[in-house]
Length: 111
Length: 116
Image 1: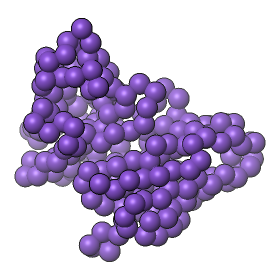
Image 2 (image 1 turned 90 degrees about the vertical axis):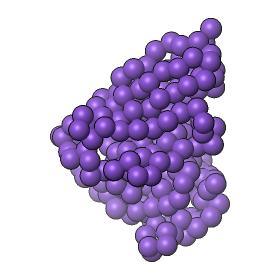
Image 3 (image 1 turned 120 degrees about the vertical axis):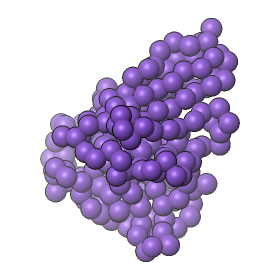
């Protein structure tokens, strides 16, 4: 199974600031078709998770350009710029390159 | 608008069964794979099972193999999770999610509590 390791576990940020969250996989997430199925999700308090970024760097429909994803192979990063109050929650990385699908343990963003 | 609405959760005794449903709307259900993901109280996300658009393929996490069965009825736009031999460690919120090489839309979740 692919183990996803996220750091940090939690972080506090000032409004308007920038944060980076790291996600590492125990195996390469490059699929045999050449795509890398690494996604980022946010779970806001008392809500279900929402997709933010898919295939490493593609913003999902309606997601602000303040969110950006980067990386390759086994190392990935989510950056949030100009942090707003609505950004608080728990961020998860997840891979869908192979079964079982797996997620990182989450990064709690506190404002 | 894509909507996924789970139902069927509740309190159940260990060893008993429960069937969850997820009613989909706002998209052509038969064109997409579907998934169940769960989240134990205060914990992270755990993928449970996936099914392909035509039910040709199903996958599940080892901890539920032989106990949980994912299925779908494309005529009813509904995804199911039949859970048997429930254990206390199955206590969680269960979310259905649509597949598009990622989990792009999620339901609001349904709580399953396994306790005597």
